[in-house]
Structures are given as structure tokens and as C-alpha cells.
Length: 169
Image 1 (cartoon, helix red, strand yellow):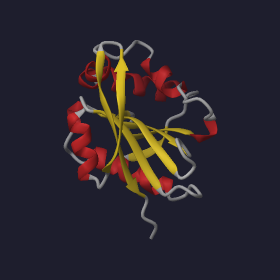
Image 2 (cartoon, rainbow, N blue to C red):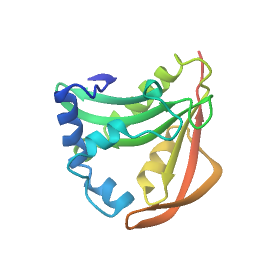
Image 3 (cartoon, rainbow, N blue to C red):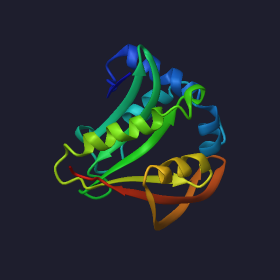
């Protein structure tokens, strides 16, 4: 197993990412009401919140050989300078509950420890992702009490915020 940053210029990384996203029908159906798009990899790789530069966006993956098992979109210093926000986090459904998601999250936390000023990991999660919320809570993330409406395509629900302090050794 190897955890590393995916490269947008790497055709093999983009193919591996699209294959993983294509297998994430349950995730995309829950958050959009539709399966993943044909170029979902490009959307995930290139999307940025307003005011964020590509220097602070990271797309991480856990690979087994050439097979991408898990990916995570992380933005350093967003929405506040002390936070690293984890956006999309997908574990291949064929290997769920085998520790790959937990390993990926631990690797993200280790990476965050190298970023000056970052003391929290943050996730905004639509409540339709019940398993994702349970996964985060099992990994010591806690709801902050913040919430807002989530609306994307055919899905309307509440989105909650969970955070975890980055523990320095």
C-alpha cells in the first residue's frame, strides 16, 4: 500500500481516479441523485472554493499497486487558516471496512502536522451520508453544532460540520 498525492498531469492517476469514482455510485447517488459523471476525475481535481489557490489543494490516494482504493480531497488553510478541510472522501466499496479509510485519514492527519498553523481537520457532510458520519465519529471527529442547508441536483438535506484536533507528538 502506498499513500501519495495524485498528479493531474499523470494519465494513469486520472484513469485510476475515474475508475474509483465510477465505482462510487452509492456515494454520488446519495449526494447528487445521479451516478458519477464521465469526467468526474477532472472536476474533483480542478474544483476550488473561491479565494483558494492550487498550492493549497491536495488530492491524496491510497494505492495497492495501480489500483486506487481510497481518495481524499484536502484544502489547507480553509475555511480558516488553522483548518485543513477534507472534501470528497471515497473508499472503494469493494474494500470497505478493511481499514483503508482509517489508514488514509491517519495519513492525512500526519500530512497536516507538517503544515504550519494547521491544528484541525474539518469535514462538511450531508446527512444523507450516514456511514460517512459514523466513520468520522469513530475516528474522533465531533460535530461542531454548525450546519447549513445542502442542495445539489436532486438532493436537499442538512449538512453538518465535524472537526478533529490535529494532535502533535
